Image 1 (spheres, rainbow, N blue to C red):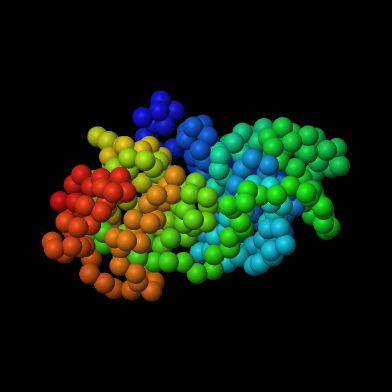
Image 2 (spheres, rainbow, N blue to C red; image 1 turned 180 degrees about the vertical axis):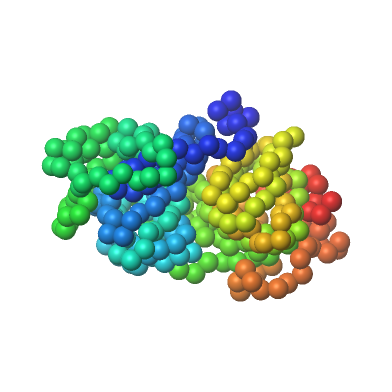
Length: 330
């Protein structure tokens, strides 16, 4: 296990960045710069401008609100529960065209974007959001110079209309992805939604959502080849990593390095909604093979695999280096 990749809950830092409150849950340095996980709160009318990252892919999951998203020639309205993947060298833009704040989860691979936020943003030490005027021409010029140091280019500044010619091209094995519909499986008794699969991200990561009902238990397990970032959308879970257990509450996150035994248990009465970010993306093919396809997270099927089913599933899990150390409920 890397010295950098310590298994523990993360204390997030918040910044005001181009008018958006950005909460850095898992910074790049915690993952050896494989990825970063950031929560964003964009106010109505917010706009991050048309820009491009030369070295980073960007993905987003919308928790609440509504966004107008532009990725290359693709433009769409993004609603809660939907996600996108924008490969590096692809111009993109996000605007909040709704009447309420838009809450998002932002994933950057590799995880160098958090360094840019820290240098360009304003550290927030309390819940109050300072009301800052739009950046001046000089401030935008300074931001452009700083962004280029981090491999990003602002093509059209925020709150300005227009287009810009950009000759860069994304890698041939990556293309923009916008997901309206997702696959849902019953996986070890837990409804699990595949939002972004490895085949859509160049196998860099997969983005999953689980719905753990009261009494649900993931079992003690370890991923031999994957790191896992966990963010709790709602509810509360008991999280065990190695020999340490702690409560994971809504709005908090933790990072689980590969080979670290871990377990999630819902000891409360309400369903816990959890986002899972696994890198690299070898887990979603296993979920497809070992799970039961269902129409939605609310569909009722048998909770855990039967004794006759669990043996073959555990054998299959070893092929994907998913090691079940203590089965669920034991």
